[in-house]
Amino acid sequence: MFSTQRAENRPILPVTEPHTIQVSQLATADTDIHCSFEPQQGGTELIRWLVSDISMPMLFRPLQKLIIMSFDDENVRTMAAVKQCAKAYSAGNR
Image 1 (cartoon, helix red, strand yellow):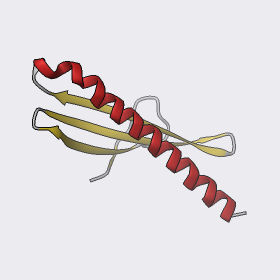
Image 2 (cartoon, helix red, strand yellow; image 1 turned 90 degrees about the vertical axis):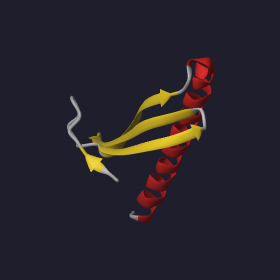
Image 3 (cartoon, helix red, strand yellow; image 1 turned 30 degrees about the vertical axis):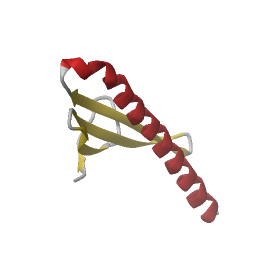
Image 4 (cartoon, one colour; image 1 turned 120 degrees about the vertical axis):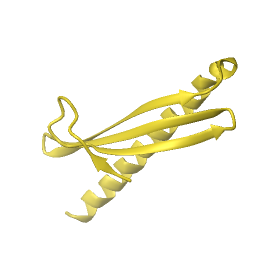
């Protein structure tokens, strides 16, 4: 489910998509993925940021970095795909 909400210091309403991800039997990640499209010098800037809460037993907390790294990798992959899509759309509208 998508929702829009006003973010502080952001002129354009961002889109927020909440996710609950069961990482394993030992961890749950509640993540809100926020996207904001903002006009920038004749183009559009996409800002994407994550807010995560990872619940897991203390014994496994060192593994939390691996979970965060996988979210970071997915964020980079998603941004690259959006950029490629935007370029293809822009080239088709000339």
